[in-house]
Length: 101
Length: 509
Image (cartoon, rainbow over all chains, first blue to last red; front, side):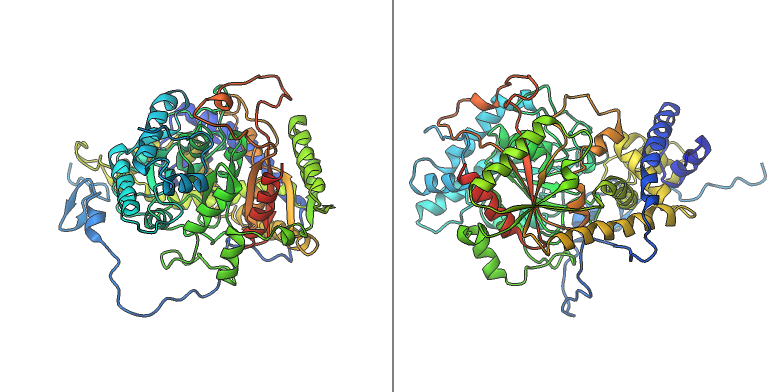
């Protein structure tokens, strides 16, 4: 399948990546070639194959249920660009709605 | 100051030299920094060095020796660490602008284990941004050159680590592998690399690319050194629930470090016909791997042809699964956390989303962007079944191929790369051509198996610090100047098989 410019813009929005027009052009071309390469997988009948969901065969890995201290909050907050009371300071999450203009 | 014979210096030789008082750890470390200052301007293997701290680490080792303390095999050994592995207090960039100023707040388990072995850490090495690439050209900061021919790439993504080891700028190094990122650069640079079984080494502190595939492993000059370094970093770690111990840890360790070659010689070696039928397999590679097979036979190893029928589906399978995991793992890099930039100097009315869009657009290079967007696509509603779910089922088929093959053979021998090291710039604008470079290393990663990369021909064991085999050699195609590597693939948690066989090969040729 081929992606349209509109598809790409939607994906970039979902992925929170702003693309320059030139980047879009190159990406569309690259993704077309890559997606065409994926087509070969359709040759395989995988109806009765269970998906392999990861690298490990381990199941139910438990740890001892006891109190432990392993969160060094300060080490984390030291890397924050702006911090207040141990929290990361960020700009408004939602657009500000201007009323009565 | 005594001249430390850093050319082709191995961990074992280093340890003996240290205990015989041929040199001190401090002298050795100083010598490595002299070498780095001389050589690295033309190779660009290191992103950062930490001379003062390293010299202090070396002094501690000398002090322990002076006080007749018993020191571990890795004590004082100058190592390099790939810059996507956390080292507390050091800038850790993953070769991305996103992490340009990020200081690691804890040690990766692998780093912490090597610290406990009193190793000396020279610096952090270059990689493809977030370990995405096969040439180290995707670094946001610099292009690493292949020490065997500086017009060519060192491979990737652990190209900085492989180049540092090949150019004698470190005794050995840590790399990470998701689809060949240890083994392929080791082959391109003519050194040894081990991609361990998934779960053999803790991933805690490795900046995640694809969590279901990533592994940390050693790059070294000899198979024995790779085994020593691997043994120091492996093991179950409470900080990584997918990490595990082999069934019989004591026996396993003994076999890793002291292989029984009589037993190793009885391993049957399988040659998967699909790997030799690949379109575009360079004649130099085919000839090189055939030489390796002949040598194996000469050493009394039985080889037989096997089949891994789903090999050709590994590239599409991998490049669906990995971008999917990438799109999720790299979501944390929002331009605020892990950065110094934050929200200051942002114009009034800027929202969080604006910052995400802009900083991720500016901060990620072309390959991470390509993978994040591709991953977002294959996971998106309506396409999930056709791509991601399908790829996971194909992954199961690829894994089953290996399981069936391992019913007949103990080890699988294959080419490692389809081509010799390619020219810088040759493939960087053609992502699909770059992806196809990984054709021989992706399958074992998808199956979670261990793989060993070793050169067909040994580097000559020279003396002194002369530069003989790290200077550019002939560019004639088919000449012996560029290294050819091959790969030994083992059953899960059977590293002793591939390392033992690799060592037997290397020490008898």
